[in-house]
Length: 232
Image (tube, rainbow, N blue to C red; front, top):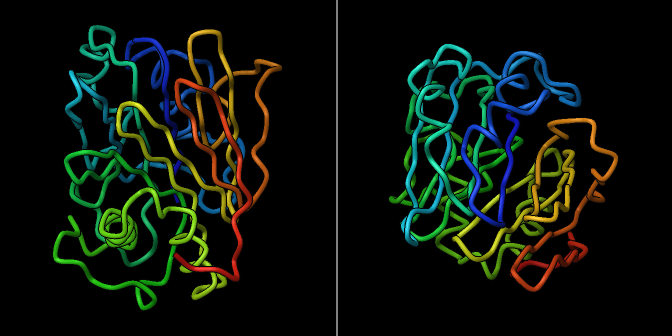
């Protein structure tokens, strides 16, 4: 299980999204409010952002609260598009940097909040790790993010116990799915945040309905229901 967020809007510092809010991902790493599976997220963290169209990542297999180097640099790094996560490893999955979101194919950044039976997934050679999230990410990259809705519906039908919340971004689009896990959205004047749980008590946070796809672009936000009876 994990907590994650995505941002698309004007440039903001990584610190403003990940460290500074009163219920930020930093706080969620040791005291999440809405997490139903696991008590904390101490098995690693990752922050991905876009720099002149290029996805960059900073990841660790250690708890976010112990990384003073990120805390010192995050206020100085700015981006208009960010995907970040703190990790609670599924039982039996490795705790290593390569198993920590966000994952990338060189164009997209992607995080998975949940769990999936690896038996229903292929084993792409491009997977960064043998953990379920890395294999799922490679599967999604292989099919293309334009097929995200169908891919999630197909995998969810194959594994009824799967929890398949995805946050993905390519610098101009921010996508997310809800599938048996929580996701909230905050529409700010300067952009949109999608997060496993609100990072503050702003009254404008809204819960995204289960089994939906969210797409954020410069044109606005759209929500589409996911159909578990259809694949890509």
